[in-house]
Length: 186
Image (cartoon, rainbow, N blue to C red; front, side, top):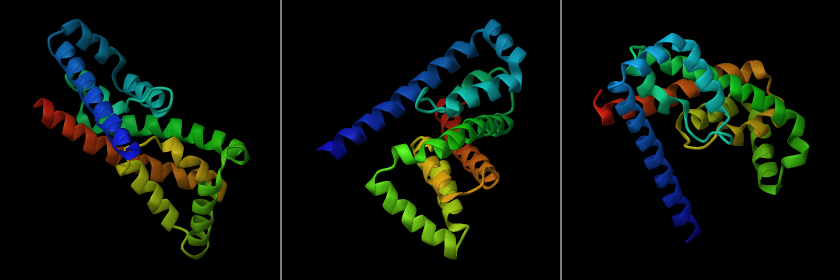
């Protein structure tokens, strides 16, 4: 029963995000003033959107959901996906640093077991947890804030986390962005 409820909530969340994206697309498609405003902010505006949306608990809308407003204003899709990924990663790094400071206050028994398993993997195969982070950021429909405390507790340097997070966020943005573009038939 609880799993079905979570699944329904997730589906409803996706419907709301796609509806939001579609409404933004329709608004900017026919509004020259909105397009000029977006172009005046350009990729810097996309970076700010990426950073703000990177804090998923504060704003639970992925940055790539704003693709329609930037794309219909003439900005390139791949550059948008990359700029959004960089912005999201800036937020991830801030969250990683906060998580590293507050790890002892927020862990529980389940996360301790996960961390113990990942520490074993890190000792014998140091890149396996990084592949897990990439998979999580690229394909899991959940905030990156959930995985960052674990990597902070494992002692991974932020310099290992940044490239993995950028790549994972970029792949996520490409998948979601192409889906949005095809769905709306830009």
